[in-house]
Length: 597
Image (tube, rainbow, N blue to C red):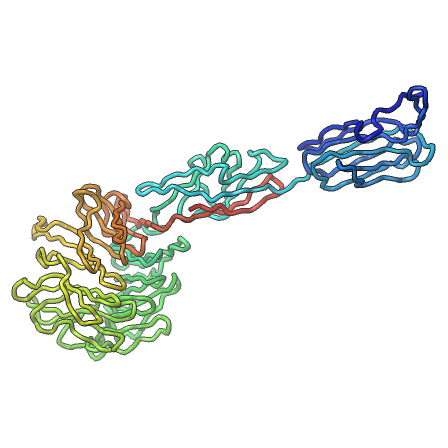
């Protein structure tokens, strides 16, 4: 007579083992329904219990077979709740499957299928862990930022971490789906771009780093000549010379460069406002046309009449001011304004067509007022007057028509006109002046009359208000310095000399509202940024460079350190960044975006 079974309750269930990360199976043998002796009594073995444990969610199969007579199978969870049962008649194998059975301990009960049935049996359990897409956790990274060189920040698993029940860190592979824009991503100092990969093990080993790229080379800017122009994050410039001088446009939003001309003609006088670039083109006949392109699209000519020569464009918003000479006559000579939205050229500006003078257009304001100079007399006795077309009144005034002053170099904002004044007889009134459009008053800019008027040159005026910058410097006929180069900023109240470092001499300043970019030609040379609101200086780049151009907190300049010149671009607002990725265990993947501030 058999000895009593010891696994006849939940508490005494026989263990079939713990099922882990890999597919696993276990079996056991037993019998059921037989009489057994327990002390002096005999009893029938009516139930056997088994248990197994899952440490991963698994697809689980349980079989009860090798039956001689009918037996049944029941599956329970750890709480004793019945999950599934196999109750086929006769000697048929009982087979129970449970998909994606969650982590936990489970119990199996074997009983006779009918009264008085008794049989030996085999019970087997197999479990295959269910594969799930990796789980990704991210935290925003606060990146370090460098000035002269990019600063590196390590992306640790505290910021980017992927886990998977069935995969190790080295098996979890990230693939870049979008690039960083303001900086660069590296694995073990090797740059990463879209399509490149790294693993969670790389992150755990601190091999993934991010560098804030505050200065970058503008693509396809080799061979740039002259000073580039900038508006927001967009840049335009001329590359080449003569009939190989072509216009290029860099879209800072997309990071792409578009060649706007490739016509074998002479292109010059490039200007930019927003995403609109304007320039003039000189044909072999000598005729000139003003052309423009919006956001890198095909160029448009303002006028295609071969009887006119249009040139020297200035732009603000959708309005382009330009000069026109009628070939073979002077009836239509003058200054005009063209609207890119309506593609209409407005009537000639009042008093811009005096036949006894020549004129030079110098600017158009954000509200479409225009300023130019008109020359009187012949060399060397030339006297210039500043003319201002007021768009509000649609009238033109001359700032001074007395003949006592030679006024030149005017720049215009929506509220003021800055200009250079040279007293024809004497020098007591020499200096830089501001004309208030609202009041009609003219005032001397403080500290602008301390050196020879010949040494002064206005460099910029804020689009609104009276902030302005100028440079000074004068050499004699032999190139000997008579007056050293310096840069100055006037904030509407006081004048400040710009010098990035002690003993430094600033020069060639460029203004955007309250920010000034300038070149320092001595001591710690290079491009500097002065924030007049904060009163702070920041060295942007070292070395000797031509004049920088600024818009907001973005600066562009021509780099001459290599044999071929190129443009460098600084974005002071480039703090936020991100990259997209997928992370895969080789079968399933998850997607995400990693953010950087």
